[in-house]
Length: 304
Image 1 (cartoon, helix red, strand yellow):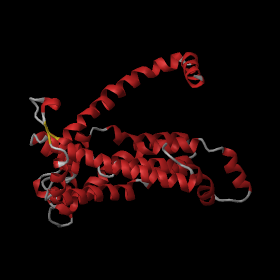
Image 2 (image 1 turned 120 degrees about the vertical axis):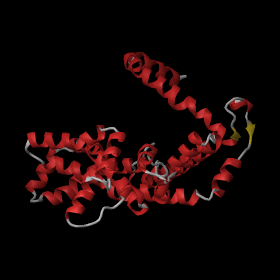
Image 3 (image 1 turned 90 degrees about the vertical axis):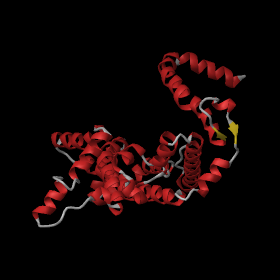
Image 4 (image 1 turned 60 degrees about the horizontal axis):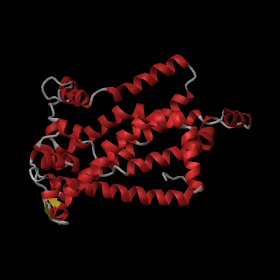
């Protein structure tokens, strides 16, 4: 009873804050939680006419079909490689950029460089991928134009499988690094200046200040962001993949998300596509849950 009383007292005292939060709550319920009921079609032979209630129940057959799929290991390999390389090369860059911005003392220059770094995030993926296609075009593209100036032959970059991962990961890093740095800059803003002043008095240079003050204070934020990224280790943005790839480079470009698009939307295999998606989400949840448990034991940093 005491807990209920405290809850209603809290609601009454902060009623306007809860009213402000209500639209967000309703949005999440309607568009994030209610649609979860549709996951049941992963266990059915879904018929769009009969609906969920009238469709035939298959149990785990769709999942068995996924693991027997001749493309399963190719999809798994491509998805993991793109995400792992994206983490290795892309994850540290926003941290480095945020620390670099934090060291800039010229305010005008700092604002200009920050704005320039944020801009790619607000460019549509369609526009970014169109730019990539144009720059890498064998006929009049910027990259091949430079190669031709030095007497080298044009390369059909988007027709050769080995180039795809580098192109895709590079564009993702370019588009997201500046915006991702904002979170780390907010964490840096919360570090007391007195710590740096005390370190300067003790004779610590910039490098030592970064190692013993900046990075330790950033560590909780870094761990949280790493945990969140682990949750999407089997998810790759299918929009950018679909805008770039073609059958000639399926060998290295085809991932679970693009496969779901082809099989589910284009091939009308809704149940099978949902089974693939559910498999991705379960793996992501397991990784986040396990990593969260490990970090909680190591330094107390945790998502929940």
